[in-house]
Image (cartoon, rainbow, N blue to C red; front, side, top):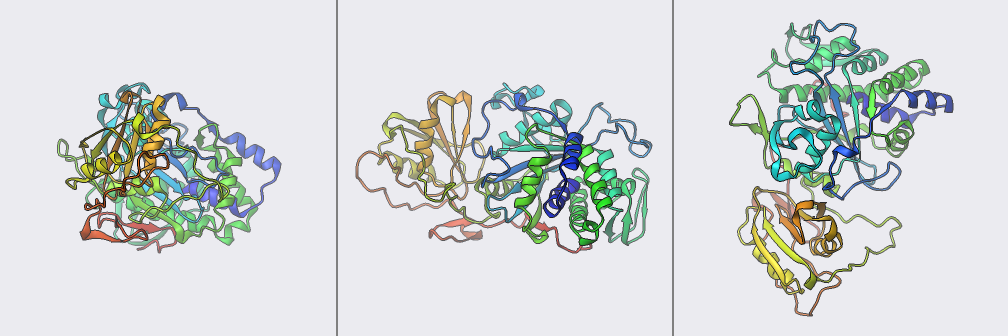
Length: 487
């Protein structure tokens, strides 16, 4: 993960010849997983690297022992056989290319996932499974489908790096400095470090980011914090002028990074270079790391489950804004174009409004504001769990109708769901905006004045629209890539 981020930033700062690009590009292994993703994917996203749209890349660290020179430290294979996604990071690059958010997903998270990883399995038949087993059962495709289905976030690209590649990248950088506040004696990883700073080679670095059971409470959460500090150190060294002045080291690093890489067919070196160029002014201080907040999974105390606060992260990514900040409207590609005209009038649409905010009366208030505009077939109910923002779900044949509905909820995320028939389902979560007029509304009666807000008053701050939006929860903290590695 750290090598992939660093590699992109390095590409932004150097000129690579055509021959070198050809060789490095041929190093990358590409696998098309589109058939495993299903037809009910979120519609927001699908951005090309050169578009002025947000870009989401899922970076996975595979725990395969294949091609390792020494498997004695980590064993010959996993217990079940095959690979797991030992590290899982969703990298969100903002549309204006001024910020990068790297979200670590704990490998022990218990989440709903497609049974047998089949693309056609409807969400009603999903089963709860440990996160890293999705990769074991169905590779990157199953992992992406699980992420999209639980978050409403569209994954544009994916990249997988293995143990061997991780070690090679660290060695190509001449080792990476780490800082440990306590002594580490971890036989499982072969680590024996005194407190303080150390420069680790590839093998030792792999042990450092994987060590868990002999450190602290032995949880994966603490290991993630150590991995994020390590990634910060990699980014700092990779973009340092010391490295950029050494073409031999630079090439060795990029060669190691690409040799270990598996991506989708549309993410090669050329596309990475395009992303890199757009990020050349981002600065390490604007690369933020965050971990999905979790709590104990009661059926198995050795596992965790996401808390409701995780929705603040997913909503921020869907809306392309800072965690807890109010969404801002995205400009059209030219800055002058208007949104596509709405083609289905409200009276032709069946709508169900679900309250996922935990605030009583919110759905009823929204229904009344819709009915005034001519939405005559509207029902309401409660969502099965608390959510964030607004999600508009629809079957493939109802996309135009769904656009009319979504226009009533600024910042709404649209997502296909093949099992909904002719009904468009709207889920209102924490921070959901008040209903606004749609351009093709019926009648002239003014919308009722809202009296209920979905934003919590105890942790909210004013927004530019006069409403309130949720602030980051105390359980969510970020780390920037320029922070001191001992902090």
